Image (cartoon, rainbow, N blue to C red; front, side, top):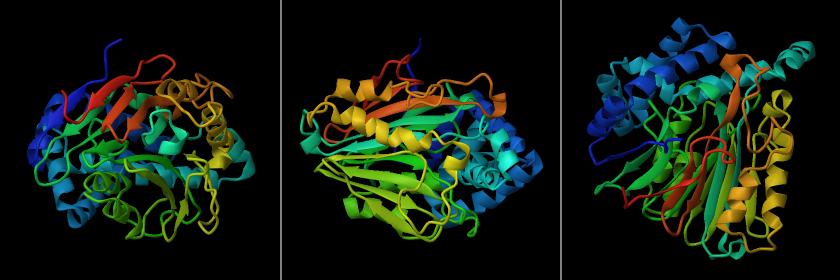
Length: 375
């Protein structure tokens, strides 16, 4: 079993994109095909998806020129069009809009979707009073399309003009989700779907917001990308700081609500727990979200307020409800285009500025340690 690949890049966004596109050209092609098949499975044709990609590239360029430059570098080096790379970087908005539409089907249609719907992620945050080492930790099992598994990598960006950071990303996506920067600011997140999604087309994409969180020098600046503009789609952001602060932010197109840790722990899965966001949609087609968050909290609480790295690893390998578990494996009964699994898992020590990354279900794939300042 080979370790998950990593890439180290520097200040220049076009050069970062070139290194990314050159190194992972084949994986980018594979990811693009995975998403185009997935979109088709929910009724979005390839032609329509690529047209959306063109619109998203223009939108991203208008809202974050540096991110757009990095996408352009990826496109040129990988031999893909800018529209194709933008489609990957806006795949969250495209996919979760489609998931929300799936959830509005008739009851009979929805019953057919229950075995073929999307899944999401299980996240947690731990304050120093809950951990054995007194550090602030974030964790996530990233449940996503099986076709993306093995086509992800750890991106390490060392910069002088902005904070350096390390993150897990998909080939073709400029990156920023599930990571930590040199100032001890970290991020994990969950997919959410609301009946309000889609009312504001082409707002700043989820993945651009994730990068901007890790661009922040101060904690309040890390919160701004989440709260300072309306959104096309819903999402949950768990943003932490090494000094002992974590805020979980549930967002929908018009609203942000806030969940703070209780007894030093906050957990989340893929349904809204706050009101005012419209109808929460994901539990209609993936009801396992209703138990994953509370279950991982109970698993972590068993330690009596002294949670170790081994405790976190054990909690992320839990198989209750399999195959729809915290540690998720592919369900062969599901059509290939919609089949999901834990495509990666991360445990992030914000004080040490390091990540432990498993390149698949953590019961099978070992966690590998990565630091910002080490290759």
